[in-house]
Length: 97
Image (tube, rainbow, N blue to C red; front, side, top):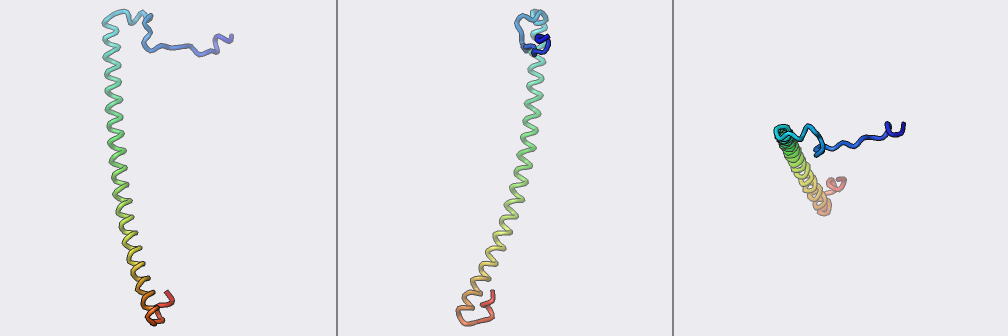
């Protein structure tokens, strides 16, 4: 009973497989393997190209958002520096900032 519960070993290209003794069968097998590999390669290339496009679009959005936030920060810092210098110069209305 324990033998039925054990997994069986499977070889993809078993040299003892009687179906692969025929040269035509081996040629069909090689052609099918090549076709499957080429299909996977095309799929991976399309997937990677889509991922790269998505990544680049996200980078552009992020860079634009960062540039806007940085420009806003620089404007606020310039206004704060102006208020500090005006406060130090005796313009007390600027001291609340």
